[in-house]
Image (cartoon, rainbow, N blue to C red; front, side):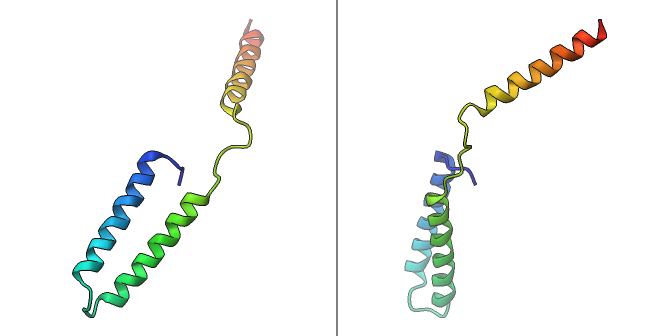
Length: 80
């Protein structure tokens, strides 16, 4: 999952819904299951928050486009 504002907002909304559900169901038989769901969601959020999922080279898109243009140019030269 890529780190961006939209995904962070989704995690925030999920954790808020779980919190509100825990308040409603406090003291019922559903409490242990809800706590387990909350713990898993928080673990996933921590993994998402601490993940460094960025490419090693920030200019990888430009290099890829340049490589494609060189290939295309060679193909056009072969046709002539």
